[in-house]
Length: 165
Image 1 (cartoon, rainbow, N blue to C red):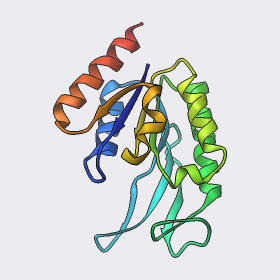
Image 2 (cartoon, rainbow, N blue to C red):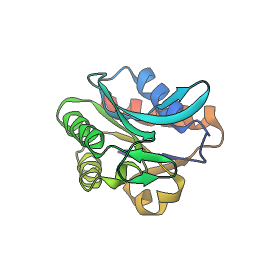
Image 3 (cartoon, rainbow, N blue to C red):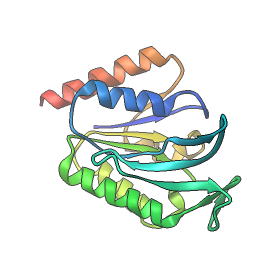
Image 4 (cartoon, rainbow, N blue to C red):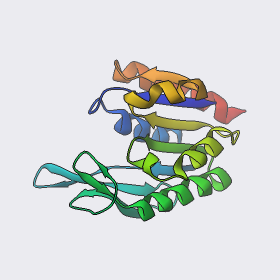
């Protein structure tokens, strides 16, 4: 069972995904991409391995490399994220991919790692940028974040049911 969580920027998709994974109490692996903030302003994004807690700077204002908006992307950091997804396929009970977005897709191997996760037979909770939903909507049940608590409750019940099997 794959779950696709999408919504507008700033709607709480990542926060909800992390809350769900925490409440499940299962061994979760994959990636999270929290913001890097300085003096209240977003200046970049981390990419974190959910199994090890290790993280790298994935994108930051002023970085050289491919650009998305004002952020330069470190492709080696995305490679680190690809390894985290592969590790989750082998070792985790549930796979979190937060997020599938323009930055992550700059690395040619990222999409393959995502496909491998979707086809792994393990539950996947993927946060997908709304602009990319058309490409991924057939990979799982899609939840558009609107009523935060209602969506959270529904996704939790689905994943809890799956974990009992």
